[in-house]
Amino acid sequence: QPITYDRAYILGAGGHYDTDISDDVAAAGDLGLYPDNTMTLYEILVGMKSTSGSMLCYPRYPANEWFITLEEGGFIPPTPPTPAAADNNLRYLGPWTEEITPTDRPQVRLHTIKKEESIGFYLYNDAPIPNKVVLVMLVNRCLLKYVPKGSLTDKELERARELLHAGLMARGHWGETVP
Image (cartoon, rainbow, N blue to C red; front, top):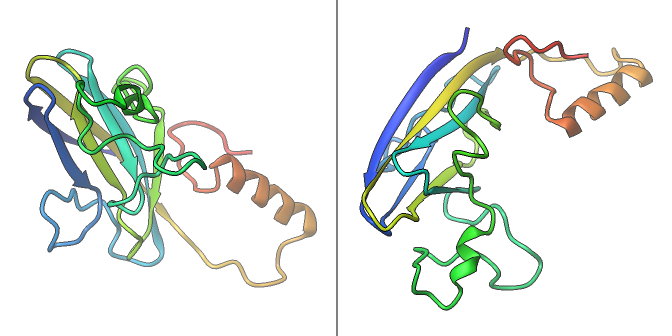
């Protein structure tokens, strides 16, 4: 049974806010969504909704680096993005929007383990008016277990690699059957 965790933020026109989902008690604005046990994995589905539909959420991993970049140097969104900036269109490079991951069917899936680098969210209000955004996170706790070396067949190892590549390695996909 997943646990729903909501966080709401109100940002002025062109306003921005940095948050992360780590459990770092020293970090301001962290959401504390990392497990305390080394044999636990949290699968987190992230959905968004906002009052104007113009909220952008940039993933950052680690929390202070842009996750989505291209090979060309400097081809990242400006910090903070501003409508008057010369690189105006770069602000649309890689953010999540509520069209991509709505709260009723979130499409963004994150997996966290104990002591992992923090995953950051950089929220930016792209609307000319103040905007409220709600991040809705469905957290599913998955128990891990050790697999003894040599106990899997070559076919099972190949299937595990396929699942890992497809992002389906963890159990608990809200009713989906993991082949």
